Amino acid sequence: MEELSLRWLAGQGVSLVALALCVIAFASKRDDKLFVLLLFANVAFATQFALLESWVAAGISALIVVRIALVRRFPRHRALMVGMLLATLAVAVLTWSGPRDLPALAAGLLGTWGMFMLRGIAMRVTLAVAAFCWVLSNLLAGSIGGTLAESLIFITNVVTILRLRRDGRPVLP
Image: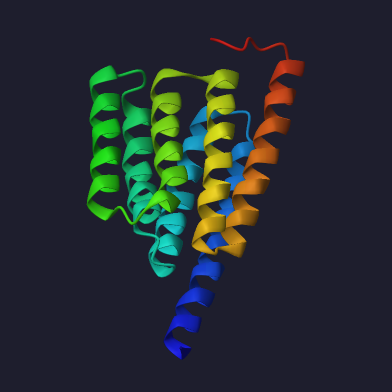
């Protein structure tokens, strides 16, 4: 039980690092800064989910690191997007433990489509829906810090969407 408690505490600590990185990322009006900070945050999320033994969420979070790197270099590349969608499905199939894995899978699929195919406000709306799915995934994994992180990401993302609208940016670029 002591080992499990240490693993649980470590997972919570790592999720707080991810929280800080994500809030800073989604507060940015610049997509490039958003992507870089999300790379580091998702390493923390993957580690957190692994420590909490939520393997689908851990695997998809690790794939998100690759996805973000690809999106930054090859935006709107349909073949890469399809490859990442298939990789996300493969991770889910290989590590599936039951219905509690559905929110992580939905978040991974939505985030992949949104990041590859959308920009600006439309991308952030899709990422807000994905963040809500991650809130559910964190709740099911028992992550207090992760649930707080994704809830704050959702709120920060909505506020940034409103800021972008106030600046007169179009919903679809």
